Amino acid sequence: MSIYIFIKDQSELESYSEVGLLSSSESEYGFSLASEARRLEFFLGRSFVKKKLSEFLDCSPQDIETSVVVGEKPQILFLGQASKWHFNASHSGSLFLFAFSDHTEVGVDIEVARPLHNLNELAQQVMSTTELRAFRQLTPQEQQAAFLRLWVQKEAILKLLNLGVGKILRDIHVEVNPWMPMRLYSLATICPSNADRSILFEEVDVRNGVAAVAYFSASGENEILKFY
Image (cartoon, rainbow, N blue to C red):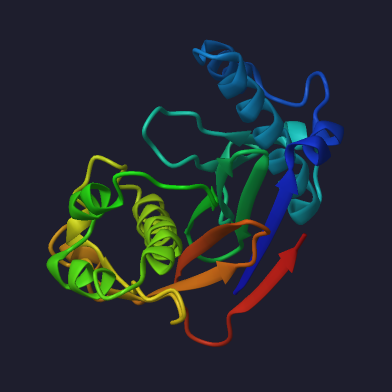
């Protein structure tokens, strides 16, 4: 099983965008987005996705269709048929994170570091009792880093499971301490059907930020390939 991870600055993605690359349904969805910033984010990101998938599948980008259902994880169609490939994307500031896999579904999240206000209130909204206990033992500076790191883990899991942010984040228990490896401890209360499936994280180095890729483990070796 291979997972391909890319981090791109928005300026780098502009070279991937070209007229006619997206399908009519993809373009229609992009133009329907409310703000210019969201439209640009979608067109640049989806153009990169289709170009990369075309390299993996050795085909034209026009042979690939990606679903654009609001609130649903995008799926891949190759020549009208469901593909074994999966992808997910996230965006923060000028940075984009992409993950592709030829075997497992993936979920990703990236956050650019920034000062967080009302941190105690935010923590109570998204952390379990166990997480809060560990969080309150950290220094204020450590808490800033720990919160974003916890957030990207939980967001990546929600996207992996196609649950959406409406699910209760406090029911997902992940590693809080910023010096420990990312890890999922429990999610059975919100998704019993996946309780017996092992979910792993790949922490991605981000300049002035934090990012996570969540995926289902598989038998045999997991090959993680990162491109910056």
